[in-house]
Image (tube, rainbow, N blue to C red; front, side, top):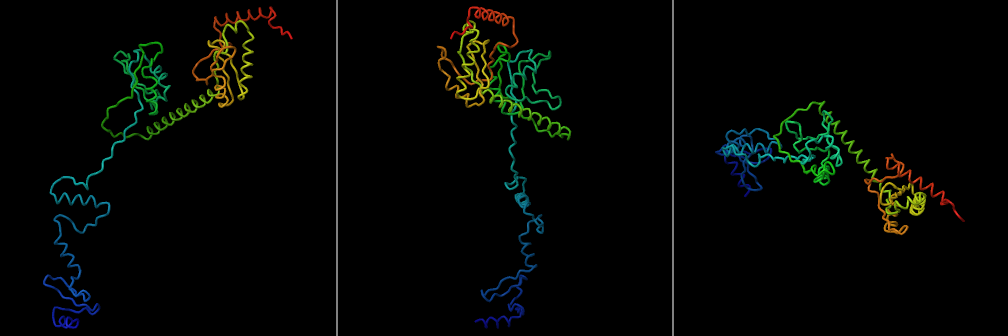
Amino acid sequence: MESTKQSDFASDPRMKLNEQTGKWSYVGDDEVSYEYDENVGAWFPMYDEKLMEAQASVYAVPGVEENVIIKPKEKKKRAATYDLQANGDNTETESSKKVKREPVKKAITSVYVTGIPPDVTVEEMKTTFSKCGVIMEDLETGEPKIKIYRDENGYSKGDALVCYFKEESVPLAIDLLDEAELRPGQASTKMHVQKAVFKEKEPVEKKKSTTGKLKAKKKMQQLQRKLDWIDEEGGKKQEKFAKIVILKNMYTQEELDTDPTLLLELKDDVREECEKLGEVTNVILYDKSPGGVISVRYKETESADACVLLMNKRFFGGRQITAEIFDGKTKYLKSGGIPSEDDEEAERLRLERYAKWLEEGGGDKTP
């Protein structure tokens, strides 16, 4: 069978035998060269430059340059171009749509305050609102960024804007200062504090000079150091206060007046009792404050906590006492400070009673 085909090919003048490959080929009416595959028993077109050009002309798209090499990153963009030309309109295809990023929301670091008095000052506002965090400062002047809205006569309209350095200060200011009085005791200065709301402005491209950028960076670093210092100092104070125990109802003022030596005896008795729980560094009797107050400072916080557990609700001298950790805010008074006229008179009377007590033999210790 195979020899029959070979003889048929040899007798046909269109057939040519390739001496190198040993395969028969011929050129058809479409000017395409065909080659005979003996394994399959069929003719197949031979791919040459003419054939490629002929096929390209069949699938050519008007206006599209076929020999352009498309880089991988440009494929999506090129495909979009082809779609536009094929559709004949300017509709943007899905492949050409750009993914729009959501704008990053700017953190709100300001509070809006209403209800402030007409004669309020920036310094007064700073004193009150700096309790909740570091106030932002103007990069040029260094002044606190507190804007008091005023009328044409310079009087406050009753509202202001306070800008903090950190976002965390905003909720703290709202919690502590909303419905609070700017001037304690004056109901007319009750404030309303809320998070500031700003209208979004059209973005304007601004070119900052190198000097301006450096100045802004330096100011932000200064404010950050101030914040770190406040946090550090606040932490140290809290640690210090945690070692102080406040004992109340330890004595009455009448007892101190009657027995001048009671002050020293009380301090010695309290120190002796409290040293059972740890090293005591100081004991102070606040004879100028009501409530029979004595403070005990320990070297370790654990000792102070143990003292509260032991002493709170105990009875001392027939009275139930209270023990608590110092809150760091309450002011207690004792003798030895800057005396007023009343303090001097009280001290004079106490010395007189002490002298009388000695004359009556109160200082004798009978064995």
